[in-house]
Amino acid sequence: MKRAVLLACAVGAAAFAATIAQQGEAAARPAAKAARAQDWTRVVRPTTAGGFVMGNPNARVKLVEYGSMTCPHCRAFDAEGVPHLLDYVKSGQVSWEFRNYVRDAFDISAALIARCNGAASFFPLTRAIFNEQANWEAKIQAAPDGELEAIQKLPPNREFLALARLAGLQQLASAHGVQASKSTRCLIDEGAAKRLAEMDDQATTQYPDFAGTPTFLIDGKMLETTATWDALEPQLKAAVGNHG
Picture 1 (tube, helix red, strand yellow):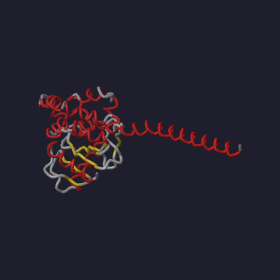
Picture 2 (tube, rainbow, N blue to C red):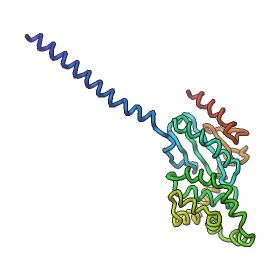
Picture 3 (cartoon, helix red, strand yellow):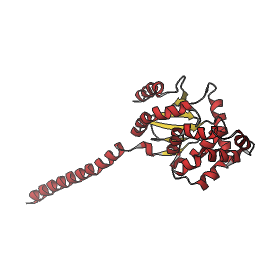
Picture 4 (cartoon, helix red, strand yellow):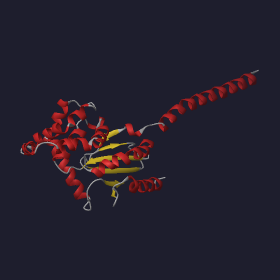
């Protein structure tokens, strides 16, 4: 009788353990599935270098782009390359950091707008500014010479604000949730403009062969003669494969 009771208890314990294991596996499956389904393009944060990085913090490959808002080659890369790049970022294999490189007052105005709301809207705003590059540059170019000359005589922070208004950049920012009152504060922020200039200095100091925009780095190494997706993707694939 005693042996039968012990046997029954053992069988019951085994069944209980199996049930717990099954429950544990069932609970783990959604978590594992969620991890696989993570869209890393939704994860954006500022970097110590002054840029913004999108993607998995533990991505095996770190891509950095130096880009200028007035650069037509950067706009072309955004249109032709970024849609493909986002697939790499989404998977968690690659993170993509964008660092502004400013070339003139127009560039600074656009960069200040893109950065105004921080990580929350940096990439959507940057891409919108690239997408509308021809339109907002045309508005500046269509302004009477006297108006542009007057704007260029303003103190720098007031110049950036005037150029942004002339180009319609504040309206573009407003469409992405950055109200005019906030973008105005960003455009007259002397500290923010100074930070952009410092980022330029850092780029040319750290990378003496820096030749213009777009410039790409993979895992800290600057890529030569790489300004298009066709040139970048093979090197990106090789880097991912090397970490596989």
